[in-house]
Length: 289
Image 1 (cartoon, one colour):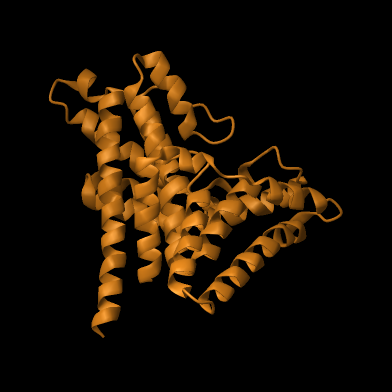
Image 2 (image 1 turned 135 degrees about the horizontal axis):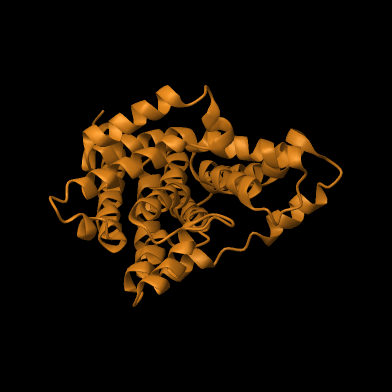
């Protein structure tokens, strides 16, 4: 766990210093492998598409663990996998591009990098905040959760499953794509739940937890498996709406999308520090035993 924490800290630091590292990902090999599975379909195609890269990743991890300079080589391998999985864009760099844009039209154009596929992100506080939180889940918190749990193979599973489920350019049949999306939503469920409670701790507790409860009361059983963790978007909207309604006559200023993006970026940074602190406490606890 200590090695994983160190790799995560280095990867986050490198992306902050050089965001273009997130663009240096080439999934051409994975795409060619998926294309070669054209004779299969449905869930079997998803399993085969994911199985080979995960087995290779696990094999590489095992070989490095039993090689000279094992710790250093495992660290470098974990770092390379993390940088790949944090892509295809650096999350912080996308936020910086929005904040640095000269006008609202340019900011809205830059905000499209937060969306997924053909999703349009309007330049409005609530919609922008929701897209930002989902982008943070997909490109940071989801990757970190599965990386801390299962190492490089966990992070790779999360990234490749999302590619299969959400990238419409991949040649998949409808059943296989549906299975991949369900797998992606399943992998999102736990880190999204943890994000809700972390954001509640660093933001508006009553509004966030209230929205989380209402979503679960109104949603159909297991609807998140087909539609994704909608409770995360609901809590993000509630958090922002509390900020707007609490403007004491300054609703126009408080509902400004740029101000809300600044506030949300700070909240997500505090949430990230909370996650890393918990992992650090686990590492320290293991040393003290």
